[in-house]
Length: 530
Image (cartoon, rainbow, N blue to C red; front, top):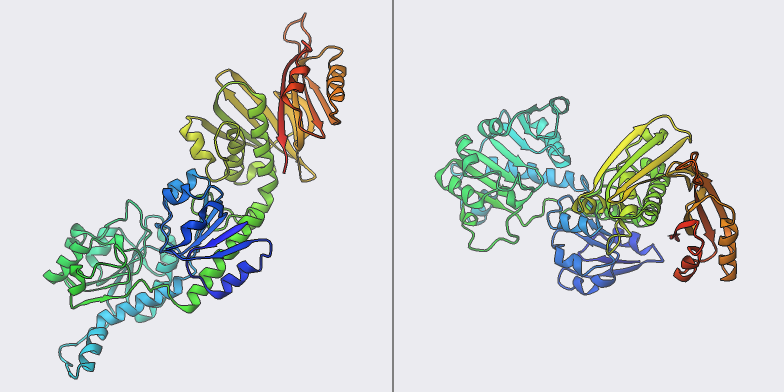
């Protein structure tokens, strides 16, 4: 296992990585890291490295990207998901540091502290020029109530400010519990004396502060941005400052970074600018560094995906509950693909018993990955299975039933262009077992080297199978049988299925020899190794 650290992280985080004695840890930098990608299993970045589709194409082994911080706009999430690469971040790790930077910006804007400092050091004494204002009684508009926005609210409250908030994903009750008024964006822009941005960068939020937004604001408003430079139209802000609509702005982030020296807004006297250091405190860097390393270890060791950006969220205790069923679901999907004919069209999953009461998103993803793997180049997994199925036009349906013949079981029905087949499985003593094939009861551990047979239930089949395998030096470890409850027609034999577990894989010539018995209609290998 190779872990590539492409940007500086706290020493304590590196120590935690280096304690994984069976892992190779490569320390690099944004300029040179790419040379290590072909053999990298996990990539740790901050904000300087841009993980594009081209970067991902150079990393065929990559399983996880850990972003030490909140924003993941430097990672191509669509390309990562399609490649089956998990992306995780550390929301909240630097929230206090960024919130403190925001409050510092607000006070500097209110009292012109940076300009007064420069003036005084230059030998001037300009008390009248730098007359300030109190923040008490003013209205603060907080755009985004994530971890950072909430920390800003905690710190702004004691200043006796009125606080408005906008976040389309937060309820009025949640905002009320924080002591703020939840309003629409236009109301916030129109009524706020200070506006601070704490939104993620998306298509919807890009350039959210544009000329139209500044036109709504009251004269003399102050703007703070410690989130992403792309949230603000820099030219529109510059125009608003020149006109006097915006009295001052404090920016920790720019687009691009670093900004060009001739960027017009940098010449504004009432602009406070810092080089994206909102989260750059010793405490924050240690917290996010340690957290992302702990998360990467949990994923690579145990499959637990904490703070995953492109995978359904699940807590560690929930993951441990459903992990055996994820394993079962993937094996059922794999088995169904191998024993069916034709091209898949749809998959229906029915969960029975207690597992039906759980969040089954990851179980579903695992099942679809199992169905996909025989059909895709590269490996389908929890991350990319649903997008890959969608690309192929498959429909995926889930049902939840509380009653079950087994305490907990999963029924997977696979429809192809040549028919429909089903497999049902259960977890018995933490091991995945097949319990029905096309409704025919059978008991088979989904482990090892298996050969699936579909045959007429007539004398001589078992002897033929044993003879062919034995004559080729293949030992039978387990032979499971089942047959349908009814005949296809009165004068026809029952349909039967068999699953033979052997100590080694059954090669193609032996499968051909098995089919020499006319009662055997299908002989397919299914491997569950590892």
